[in-house]
Length: 267
Image (cartoon, rainbow, N blue to C red; front, top):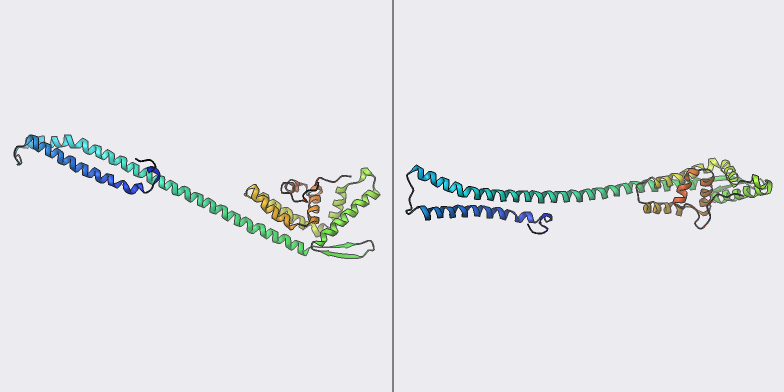
């Protein structure tokens, strides 16, 4: 058996030649034994009419050829086992390749399903942004409607106003930025509550997927690229003071303004 023969499918086509050689060897052995018998025990080319002569002739052939044919049969058996081993190896290799291909196909299908749902959630987020509208009253009691992303500028402005009101009206021990944000959130809960739920749903969907951490980071960056500066700041406040269970995921995927301290504000 040559090196690498067990892993080369084309070797199977060469092995039947060995069986042909075995058959030829059997005929050669038969011819040699017949020739030796004739050369040593027969002076004339004629058949004996005595039964005991034929019996001895049969014993001679059987005693010499039977071990030879048995050996050839054993060699043939070994070749058959070798053939089966190669076929099993080739079958196992094909099954392994098929399993790898099927696994890759399943991964591709899973990724396609993930992306279909993910971009549907992004589309839903953009729809929420488009439909977002809040009404605010200024110091002169004039009511103004802020739509789409302008709403976040107004929300951030009102949060800063509540922040400074606490500084001006409450002693140091009574001030709380968390209360300022919760007050703002309570005022606009009906308008922005579904917005935060949408953002958190997308982040959870990314984190719960079976993708690698690099792939999760890639899709989280796509989400982050959709968010304005004011959105990122409000998401940071909301995850610090209201949806605190989301804080680890917000930090994990850096859904905030990079380079700015994102720790809770206390004053």
